[in-house]
Image (cartoon, rainbow, N blue to C red; front, top):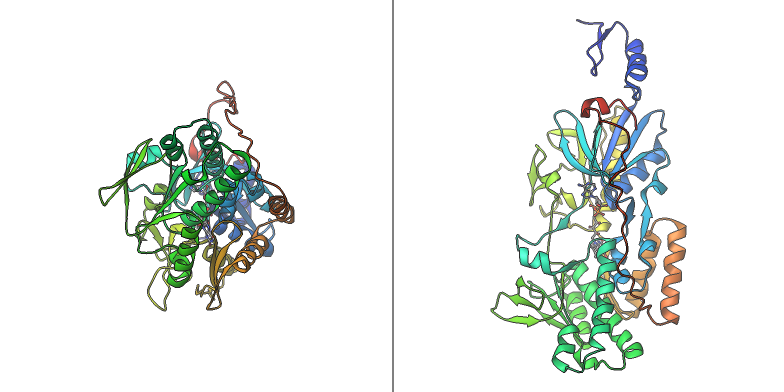
Length: 478
Ligand SMILES: Cc1cc2nc3c(=O)[nH]c(=O)nc-3n(C[C@H](O)[C@H](O)[C@H](O)COP(=O)(O)OP(=O)(O)OC[C@H]3O[C@@H](n4cnc5c(N)ncnc54)[C@H](O)[C@@H]3O)c2cc1C
């Protein structure tokens, strides 16, 4: 019946919008229905970028913003290989998400279900596994990507990865442990095996990791392990392609390859790693390499919570978006970063999954949500030509492709540092990382092995009694 306003939570009917709003606030303890809800899933480059841009333009009286992330921090991944090699302290490349939340609400939780029909997202609290439901008017999907082992269980069980802070810490601890073990054996073969580390994947993550690790181990052996013969240090990079670093182009990729070979990295191209055990890695050419460390940077996949959403997908389960970064059938749903399939209209190719692109995309997503919030239809199209790409390859050497020019060596390394330091969020972390870099120039790397950390489980600890139903929880503002 016209002129009637039905509460969507309990079906009560009101004769004015005002009394319906008052009812929703008091009876259901939720925000006024006139306040639009923006829900951001993922606190990486894409999600935090959208959060920061929207917060600049709206007040909490107009829009309620919520962000969900599995960890309570944003991770600055380009500095992860340096962290794994002991240059930067782990917490200096991570920024608590609450630091970005001027008005937004933050949940440290795992996104476990996304229901576009009901506009409902289910999250599972990290610390006790309890579920909670969140509703939205605008949904931002920015859950990044996960390691992809292509179903190879042996590889998954026997390799390290380089995607999280824990990965970086584990890798550094393992490298130190291998040096300590190698220093205590006079057996040449065993020492070589302990100091052979194979990195699978010739992209950013793999190349930067082998470059930094090679430098870390060689320098540490030189300064602290007199019983290790440096000839036994055998870093190996395995690339399925003909070259490495496709992100910076063929010419610069070759420069990086030559440099790495010069400093003692063995590069195996056109080869796939197909199997692994604790003691060796198997290759698709039938060969195998005895080693005690395998690091997998050989591919990424999309979180199943994204690929199982009932909407259009493309490019390995990524969310299909139009040029405004909206899912075509759900214009209130935006996707960006590694989990979105964003096509460059000019050449029909997908934009690459990089931090640089996720940051740019976040500005467009934020602009378009703001435009929609004010009832406008002048959406901004996403179009971006990368100004350049760069990578560090260890020992104060970098490769940079910028404004069509190629640079390598110490100048490229200095540009890399200046660029990424400028992009690292918060002044506090910039100062801390700059200090870590300065310390690294003046002193040898810290070889303290911080292991065996005792973990206390809180199994008897409950937050509240019985959990209400998902729908009820919507109204119980935590
Ligand atoms: C080692 C390494 C080095 C790199 N170097 C560079 C570089 O030099 N330059 C460059 O441009 N790019 C680089 N990249 C790529 C870059 O990190 C990604 O392209 C970028 O992070 C993508 O941003 P995003 O927001 O899509 O995802 P992310 O930044 O990965 O953020 C996704 C967030 O979602 C969270 N999340 C995922 N699933 C769930 C879930 N179910 N529930 C709750 N939270 C969840 C994750 O924990 C994460 O915080 C590098 C990547 C790695 C791993």
